[in-house]
Length: 422
Image (cartoon, rainbow, N blue to C red; front, side, top):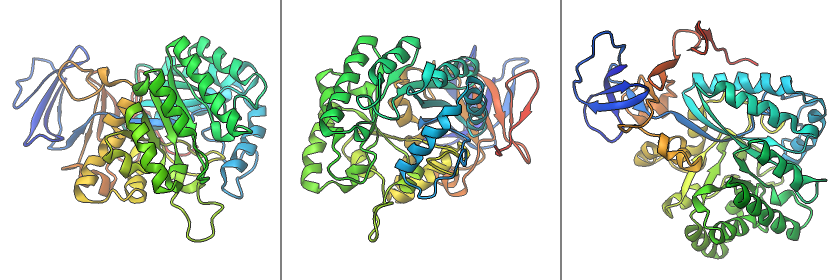
């Protein structure tokens, strides 16, 4: 495949990209085509590496209103609703819903997803379904699975044993939810226990950390300290950390010293964080998103995720990382011109760092031929106009193309139209 006449971030002028045997062979000006080669004229459009969704829950998607709607909009009511919904979980139920949303991801230019999968179900049904989904969708999108104890580890019967079973079955990483444990001591112990398992199974760590407005919720310091002691920083992610927005600055200053030593990753989920947090405030209401701007200024890796799509935790969403980025730049005050340009790192290269896939990610010679072509002149236009990719290409093959009405994805012998209704 030869892609001609495209704009590349941080490069002047128009470029061509040659992809051979699934890998980027050349990025040069005016590459001559090989006889019979597929040629795509980018028309001056912007090329980006595929979007990365650093945090989602594919086993929850599409369950909004089932069995009831979340009337308060709070995290804790959402957990209670899910506790009822999971009683009806089946293998096919999870697989069908997750597969549909992954097609939405593909249509919107996302090719890498990290999903947290519940481990508090009999027989680990959701994990079994997601392992099969991961395998089936591997030619089109990478799915990374994190074993997630939604109801806690130490306050849930056999919680730790279920997490270990999930790692044995093939989960890529392990999580925790310390702020949901019964006591501060249990919260600390839950974090320490997952690091032991992560070391034992060479697994990634991604903790639902301090997803609350409580300024005394300080699981992040324990996560960072354990990451430093195990020398695992780049393999460790703290998701949400919304309590950080409520910390006093004296504590935050000390904390940032630890965070920089630990060198862990952070994931913010702007749409969901601003939706769920601040629910117990009158006025002023807190913004409910972690200190993204300050973390970036400190040189720490931050990326964005969808988190939830049409489920008890969040009623909206179409698996579009541009929608998430658009919300994020507003909530995090990243609306200076250069900040807007740089913000694309939050859904591309920073996400690749979070998922620990930088060896296979990026627009570089020798890397897989995975990219999006967007009909826009620059990043500013993409985010302002919410421009969808005209092409999403994986290993040198078109897997999605935006045409009038609905995008088409190519997952079988015939093109399949994708609508955004569930």
